[in-house]
Image (tube, rainbow, N blue to C red; front, side):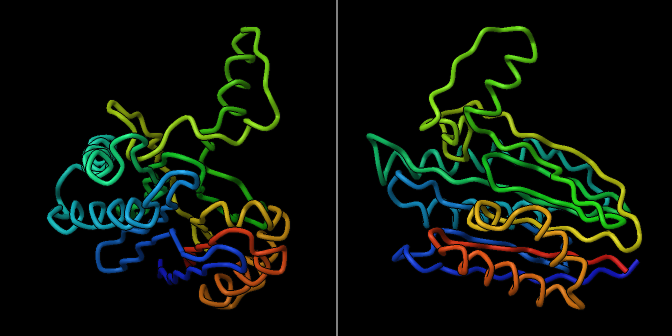
Length: 237
């Protein structure tokens, strides 16, 4: 299979600074989105360090090595946590991280926070990650029969992020890639303003990954552009 990829980020129409970062490396087959946590200081530095440390791990990784994705998440978290102790001793700093690493026909996904990975296959869109929010955590507890209550203003608050005090548990999953699959890694600056059905249509209709990324960002800005938006798009032919 042939892989085509493209990444793009945009500050949006309201925020003074872009605190998103991305990685798009065809040479190492590693792709990622990191979104600095709003409400905490130095979000841009948190996301930049997150992506830089991820790239560093794969730069020294031999192709034949077995990759411990959870360990990589833990190592990155420790580095960002220590930087937070310096930049913001009281509050810390934080970032989301969603990455995809291609090994053969397997796409290995690591995830912390509320950026996400989506797959378009046979015209069906599916989110491959679960947002680490209070709302989703309470839903899981409710499904286990626990009694829970939720304040709507807190439902999107994160329960996990890169930069939190250790330990951290990421979600690591593996997916078999099929011909004609299309994948999107993106920050919530896109998913909050572009619904899944529209994302599916954009991925399906785009001839190139660059066109899909640009259209997704344009739609997010047309929806208000209240946040930074980042898209990393993978097309498998």
